[in-house]
Length: 87
Image (cartoon, rainbow, N blue to C red; front, side, top):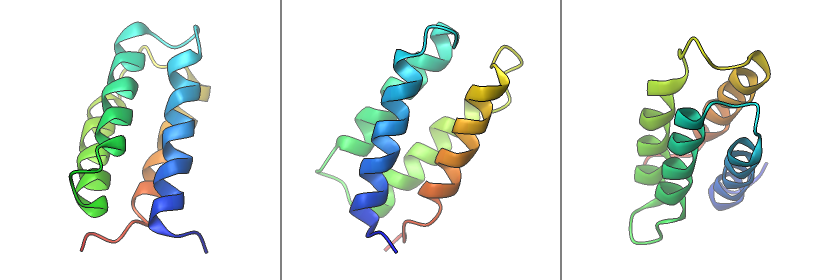
């Protein structure tokens, strides 16, 4: 089982892939970049970063313009972040 830090690193990589995919609308890529910044902020606890990232991603997860492959990545990302303990 990966450590919380490894999980966050994996999620950062997934967000990078979303940001680099030109088939994903700009507003979704912008939120992915913002979320990646939140996850990379070492000044906050890892649980806080994960919870904030889930909140940001949740806002775009129901965007009707999101391609199906991106929605699948977003759901996987949220599932990974939910494994990070909040303490």
